[in-house]
Length: 131
Image (cartoon, rainbow, N blue to C red; front, top):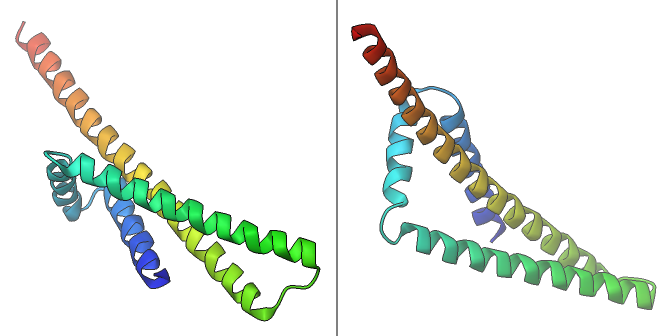
């Protein structure tokens, strides 16, 4: 699961970098995100996000349980240490993935708004020029 989470995080980071800087892929990424936001896309995205959030909460709860047992019992065995490190890595990757998904959504929205404002501004300039 950790490898999948790393792939998701790096893919989202590449997507954000593609949206931030003007390059040949930016137009295709924006068109793809536009298509994803039509139809059932938002429902699927919210369902996946909610599922990841539930798994994130479960990993954090399990890590807190291990930490509570360590506080009560004093020493912690090596198996629980490895399990705790694994849970913390999974939880941090899932949280970072959800954060990057939110950033991607907002970047797409702001790019579309900026495009609409520029079109409106050009229309007003042309109208004032011909008047």
